[in-house]
Length: 134
Image 1 (spheres, rainbow, N blue to C red):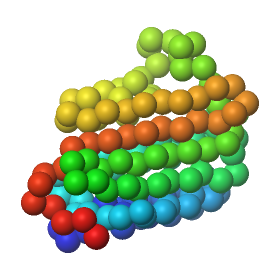
Image 2 (image 1 turned 90 degrees about the horizontal axis):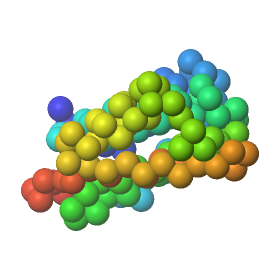
Image 3 (image 1 turned 45 degrees about the horizontal axis):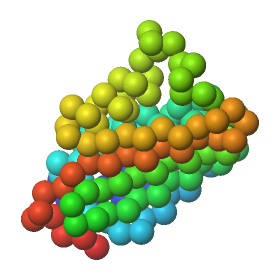
């Protein structure tokens, strides 16, 4: 119950590293309590999993930035990338597990990717004003 979002991201990253053998570096620019931001954590987890499974990159970078109004997580890889416009509509991965999840909770997800240049996810979710930034 007292976990921070940054600690939770590091725990998720450690599990994915162990399972897939891909290094994941988590950098916290700032941090805040996890409570209320679970959809953001789950979307970031899916982003890390997709990068570990599909990018071909040997390293994934995760950045946490906490602002007064929102928590933002960036998941980046320098892997094979893809053209988001060419993803078939019946593929649920990023559309459902990341974009859909955050949208349902009032957040946003931006996907930037091009073949052979890697992928960046920018995931954000509003925070409650009473949370403290550390």
